Length: 600
Image (tube, rainbow, N blue to C red; front, side, top):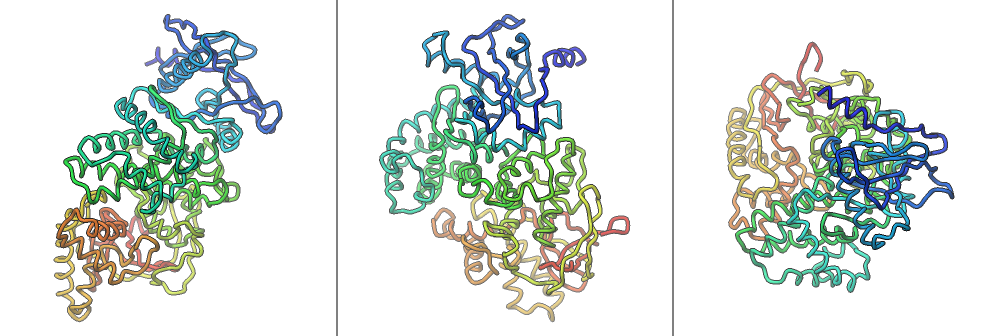
């Protein structure tokens, strides 16, 4: 290990300082020729340059978007204007990208030595990764770095899913002429949602009659979209601000519009597959849902137009799919700040000298200021029993590494969260007040004690993507639990109330009808009945009803409980006997709290 560290230290770049006041950046020039390294292998050669953003002297360059992948273990040669080339270790995926682009240069110039060498901005080389101060400053300029690049090249790699790469190549060749003919190259994502749109009719014939071969091809396309790049938190900003985006993989390339079309295709297929037959059907349906969830985050360009959405809105939508990931947890926040409308005023500073727990604490404070007590409910969802990193978050601080669920969408949606009406008013018109700071583990709030938990039901561990009949067993257990609890308190629960509890409580009395969250009504009851007693689980009507009900079940693992005086509620998976139910001043619903060392 010591020898490896010594070798790595000897292959780190020695960077000349950047002039931060003048917005200086580094660029690397990719040379046409490969050169021999000390191990005898021919490797890419790059030349380091420094330039100033927003000036006439800024060279034409391309920004590279890719996944780092493994730790640096591949050699490239880097020289600068004052020093000869030295060997530098980079990640294998970046090395693959550089080999690929050198190959493209050779193909383009036919081996001629007198050829323009392209400039690239590559974070792994152009930012001193060992200097937190420089890294913080450069990340603040990321939107302008991608915005001022003449193009953005996306590298998906050469070591993963070669079959899906070949299918993607066939897909782009097969359908691009359809898109060009119908839309003149301009993809309008919403077009596909209309059954009578021209584009929808054309795509309806792309794969012809349904067969298992079609499903296999579709399955391979979903595999293509499961590449780790699509789940990078930084992709949202890079795509929103980049231009002339081109996707590259080992055996092909495509314009970004192909990914937009793919998203439309998946949305269309999800609708049509409800009526299709085939042995691959169930597998493809599940994979389609996951692919749509992942692609929707980066394809929804209207949502991510720079400076139009608040940081809280962007975080909620980005994390709502549960697909976005970052090697450094703080990047789940920093990656959104550049394109948010309040990134400069939200009170969070990009600083890689801070631990991610402090950054998450700053987000928690912003949530509390924006959403009030409702932010505590969201934070309560985003907790894990044990953290493999060994880092402990306070119970009022959301773990942004976990999927957001839909509760935050109900509160924020695409509107100003301050204007979203409350569905409940448990604490009346009381004002929510708190005292805390991002480095403290204690949040001070005012509450009123209501009751104590004395009995628990079974948690709902049903996976969202499974078919409706998987909810039946839990629903029947839940009904039995509610009936037994209500019978012990007959004066509190009459027959009608008991029946309504069966379908209102699993969705916390909040129903998503596809357009807006509202109090559960007869529409929700019909969806519940279709879920509990499906005549045909694969029929389009049943799937439509049950999917809305499942969408409304915002908390995976939710557990029913009974209090000492007979109240029946729905709580966090970690709810335990002895926990207390409190009304938080300014909250719209009660909270389940637990005493720890004299605090709650």
